[in-house]
Image (tube, rainbow, N blue to C red; front, side):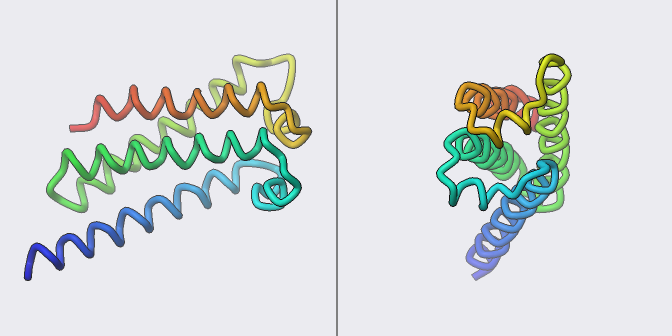
Amino acid sequence: MTIVVNLVVSVFVIILLQVLGMVIFGLMTPFKDMEELKKGNVAVALALGGKFLATAIIIGVAAYTNTSILHMIIWFAVGYVCLIAAYWIFELATPTFKISEHLEKGNVAVGTMLCLVFIGTAFAISSLIV
């Protein structure tokens, strides 16, 4: 019975962290992600999908490598801060334009690149989680 309870609590915490991560990412953009998706903005969809997958990679590795839910949450927080830092570093590395403006305009190249920045960062950071 204890295994079932631990599993249910772990799944609940993982879902909660995933939702929290997406809400925080949503607050970082000056536009409403869901409104852009309703408009069919592929660039925003790619960036949002990259954020979701990157967050899931961090959570997955943190859950896999830690038996304590508290340690999983701490490692997720560390990884998540790194994902946010990757966004701002990408923004600084492109001084000739503002990423959020290009996403809102539907620039698929920028959305794809940002998607891959998030996923690549998640894979790199997840290798550091112990």
